[in-house]
Image 1 (cartoon, helix red, strand yellow):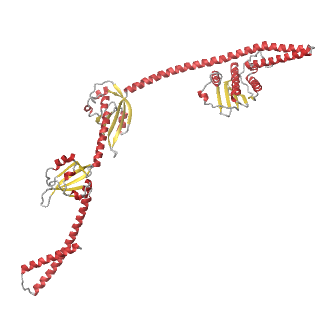
Image 2: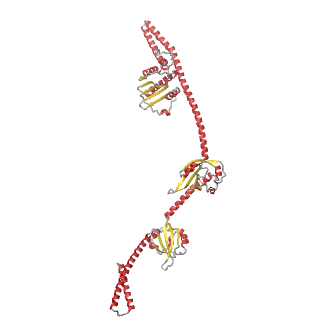
Image 3: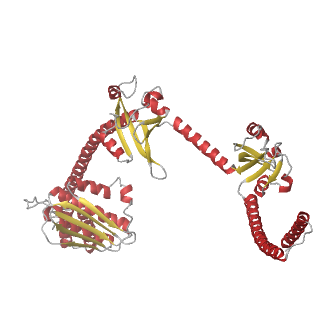
Amino acid sequence: MEKVKTTQEKVDKLRQQAEKLLENKTGKQVMSTDDMFKLSHELAVHQIELEMQAEELRAAQLDIEKSRDKYIELFDFAPLGYFTLNKNNIIIEANLTAARLLNVERRDLIKSKFTRFIAPDSQDTFYLVYRQDFGPGEKRDCELFMRRRNDLNFAVSMEGIARPDGKGKFTRRLIVITDITERKRIEDSLFRSEEQFRNIFENSPIGIELYDEEGILVTCNKACLEILSVTDKNKMKGLQLFTNPNIPDEVKASLRRRETVKYEARYDFEKVKQAKLYKTAKSGFIQLYVVVDPLFTTGHKFTGYLMQVQDITERKKSQDYVLKAKDELEIQVRQRTAELEHSNKELRRLASHLTLAEEYERRRIAQIFHNGIGQNLSLCSIQLGRLIHFSDSAILTQRLKEIQNNVKETLSETRQFIFEISPAVLYDFGLEVALERLAAVLAQKHHIPVNYKDDGKLKYLDEDIRIMLFQMTRELLDNVIKHAKAHKIDVSTIKWRRTIRITVQDDGAGFDTKILKTKRSRGVGLFSINERLIHIGGSSEVKSKIGQGTAITITAPVRQESRKKTTSQITDQEV
């Protein structure tokens, strides 16, 4: 409303000035009616034109004001800091972004010296760039550090250009600053990373070669020069990956397909000299382990190859030495194993012979007892019986009967002893009858049920195998009676294919069979039984669980047909 009023006042003032000018120009003249009518018409038309022009001016003024407001908005809230300086570097204008970057109110910036906001270390940079006047259209830029109100420096990119003043002279400077602190931090980080990478590259103990997409060497590190016996990196320039005779053809084919390759190969220096790859005084060859990776950008564009090289000559020599030593050791181990196996066989043979010798000695002692003591006791009992028959004295008869009973008990114990050390029934009637007799004797002696069962099939056994099986079964039964705390024992013999299987099963305490793998008996036990069985071509099997009893099966080979049996001097009837 104020703007409309002001415009109307300007129009009224302008009309007054026009009337005054018209009066001075025409003076007081008398006009005719026609002239007055024409003049009135022209004035009316002219008035309408002036009103139209005034309306256009008002619209143009509104557009200008909008543009000015938009310019002010863009100027103040631009992401860049804007300063207008005079020739003495005094701030004439500044936008809100500039004030925010310097952490200063904008009113405090105006008429301030611009250099007071530049960090001391960057003062020289500013003066070197902006000490001279600018020419029209001349642009200058630099990077420096500015200082905020709280004395915290930040990095900026500064651009300056000359601006004309009201008189058209280029005495003003428009300065634009951009905060590049974060960019500087990233650049410093990248620089440190690049420096760290370069240190790793140069000081790596692994040889590294970098090739471009055509397979031409770009650079390599010190370790690579040492491995390839090159003194100057420049001598390696122009080395081509695909013409190197020391790289196998299949590797080159994989590299052309841009595949990662790992391989071991000989590096022959004679081939290097013949192909004139580079100058080297070294001869012979070395063994290399090589890894080649194709390089790609983030946009999957192929840029070249990265080759890693390691000299494994000494390692290969060590491996060859170790393999040779391993082969020699394996030969010695096989020889030692064969010797041990031979010794084990001898030990088993000796153990079997010892067992048989022991059994033969037992049999000899049993025969001595049977033919000597046994028969004498039998004769004494018969003679005592005759004396009792002819005796007339009751006292003498009673005394003789007591003596006869003692002789009979001694004879019974002697027969029991003869059976225990060497049962004649084993030789006369076979293993099955001997085991049945053994089960009955043990059951009567220890008051525990011992049941024996046979499948009724003929089992032809050599005498030494028959003796050993009887002894093993007796040992197993003795162990059950002593340690298992069993209430019942079952013994069975069956013929299975070409073997005899003897099983001793009880319902006793049982045990964990894992201890058989870590603990072996040094006396007469499962280990001893198994060793003797191995010697005669047999085997053993143990099944047991704690609290659920134990079942042990021993197996030995049988003959296909019977042989003539040798009858013992001790008969079963006598026993």
